[in-house]
Amino acid sequence: MPYYRVSGEIPKKRHTRLERPGGGLYAEELMGEEGFSSDSSLLYHVHPPTAIVKSEALADIAGEARLAANHPLLPRHYRTQDLPAGGDLVLLRQAMMGNDDVRISFVTADAPSELYRNSTGDEVVYVHAGSLRFESVYGAIDAAAGDYVVVPRGTTHRWIPAGGPAGGLAGVPAGVPVTALVIEARGHIRTPRRYLSQTGQFLEHAPYCERDLRGLAGPLLAEGEDVPVIVRNRSGLTRLTYAYHPFDVVGWDGCLYPYAFNIADFEPIVKRTHAPPPVHQTFEGPNFVVCSFCPRPLDFDPLSVPIPYNHHNVDSDEMMFYVGGDYTARQGSGVGLGSITLHPGGFTHGPQPGAVEAAVAGLAEGKTTTDETAVMIDTFRPLGLGPAARRAEDPEYPWSWARAARR
Ligand SMILES: [Fe+2]
Image (cartoon, rainbow, N blue to C red; front, top):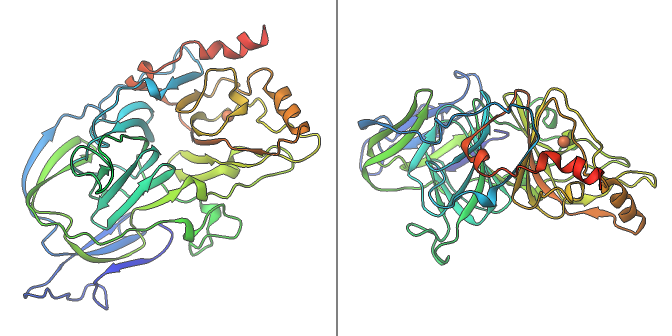
C-alpha cells in the first residue's frame, strides 16, 4: 500500500503496552507481507485475535468451478445480464475466467456476506452498480458504482449491500442489488511501480495519487462471541469460529490496509494519435494488469484515427468489461453495457468494420470526446473459461467482424 495511515488509539512506540481501561492490555497483531520484509500494519485488539473454538470444512462451489480451455480458439462475448441474480459477494461469485494467477468472477448480490478473508491473495472488487458497505478489522468503506475496493490478503471483512434484505444501510430501500466484478489474485495487487517514487510517493505523471485513495472510517468495535469467519486458503474454504468478534480493533497504523479508488478519479492520459492501454493502467498483479478506460478527449491530430487499431498482443489474453458510455469501436457487434469480452492471444482483434470510418467522420463533425468507460484485465497466461462464462455466452460474436465486412 502506498502510504502510512493511523486510526484510533495506538501506543507511542511499536511493541509497547497499550492498557485497556478496565485493566489488562490490548492484544497487538502484526499483519505484514513477504515475511516481515514488505508493507505491514499493527492492530490493537480488545481480545486475542488467535482464539478459535471450532473449524469446519466448507463446500467451495465458486472456487472449485472447473475452468475449460479456450479451445477451439475463439474471441468471446458474455452478457452478464444473463447471469442469475441473488446471493452474497463471497460465496456466490460466478466464475467467468481464470488461470493460476487470477480468477475473475461476476456477482449480483442482494444479501450481506458472512465474515470472510482470502488468505491466498489480494482481491479487488469493482462495483458496477448499486452501493454497499465494506466492513473490516481496519474499519469501514462505503462504496458505490465505479469504486475499486482493494482488499489485502488476509483481511477479515464482510460486504453489506445497501438496501439488502437484512443488515442493509439505514435509509436505503430494500432490494437494490449490487453487481460487481471480483478480481482474486494469487499474490498482491499493487499500484504500478512506474507511478511511484523510490520511497513510494505517487509521481506527478501518475494518473491518480494519494488524494484519490479513500481510506477507512472507524475502527469498528463489534460485540459478539462464537463468531464464524470463512477463510480461503490454499486447501479450500474453512469456517473458523472465533471466541470473540474479530472487529474489536481500537486502533491500528501502517501501510497495509484496504482502500477504495473510484474509476472517475482516474485522470486519462491522451496523445495526439491513439495511445495504447498502458496509459490506462491502474493496478498490477502477478502476471496481469488492470486498466481503466475513462471519458477523455479524443486523439486530436487532424489525421488521427481516434479508436484502437487492429492489434495482436501476442503475449496476452485481454478481458474487457464495458461499464459506461458509448463504446464506438464495438458498435454493431452486440457488445453493450454489462458485456464482457475476451480477446485471447493467438487472435487479432480490432474495431468492427465501419467503426474507423464512423469515428473519422465523427471527428470531422466536431466530436472531440468519448464517454466510454471500461475495466480491462490483461493476463500473461491464458485464461480458462468458467461455468458462468459458458452460461452467458453470445455465440454469434466470433463471426461479427466477418458478418459486417461482407455486408
Ligand atoms: Fe484490445
